[in-house]
Length: 330
Image (cartoon, rainbow, N blue to C red; front, side, top):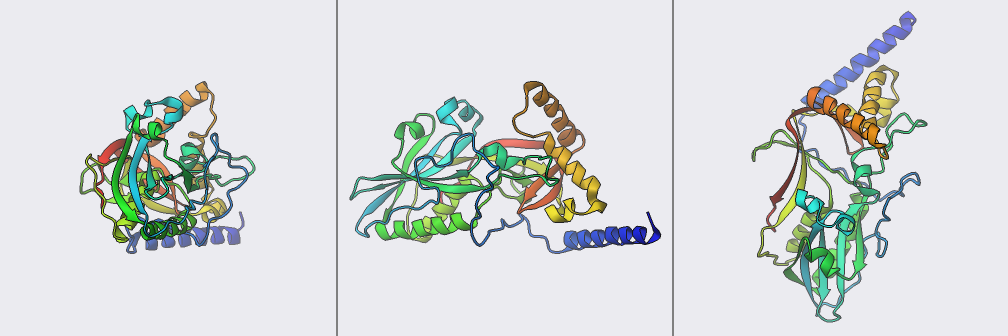
């Protein structure tokens, strides 16, 4: 390398160090706020769902209007993830999916609204490593789905179907507009909640953005509109935690994967995510489990993608935890 090239490379490294130092020492807000967009982009055609998103409903979350004289019942609904395929298997691990139901007293019509991954949970949690693209490729959009009807057996057999309140027609109409606005601007799914430790007073570094969070946002909006919500049972929800020390901001695709000076970091991120690639054979999956254990537990390292940016998590015991914990109605 020439003297001029060496100087330029050194200056770039110094500049990146100063930027990282400034960011880490600025007033970083925890948890990092979820970044919304102006409008939902079209999903890339590379992304494919094993099970089609919202096959019998409206994938934009649009609901019909109601007369103000109508009384709309509100239902809390919960069932094991992939209950239609595996029954209560994931329910035994407290891995639950949440939705909200509505029933019109005037028309007798029932409606279900839920928010979930466009391309299944695995694609929202880990990216694809494509040979033709150096940066990891994410298929991590989530969206609201509205469809007519409530499948009583699906929700009640292994989960929850409980009336928790009532709305006027106007309150329902105001909520439906909010659902569309929320759905248009909050576009990506986030599996992990990242905390400093399991204690009640732990610092939350990043919060999840998943089906249950949509339900919590909807409940809060309904109470803002004047609805009274109450449950006779404990309102528990699934949380998937990672535990780490204070995260370090790394950058976005262009700042990491477009800089020769950061090629080692870029390669390490690709190697990390390659461990979690989809469609592995059983022997490859067994090897990947060992590699994941070495990286996350022994090396105490995890790369998180949040707000289209990468962060490094210095992992801490117990590393990962799935809980089923109470979140009271607002």
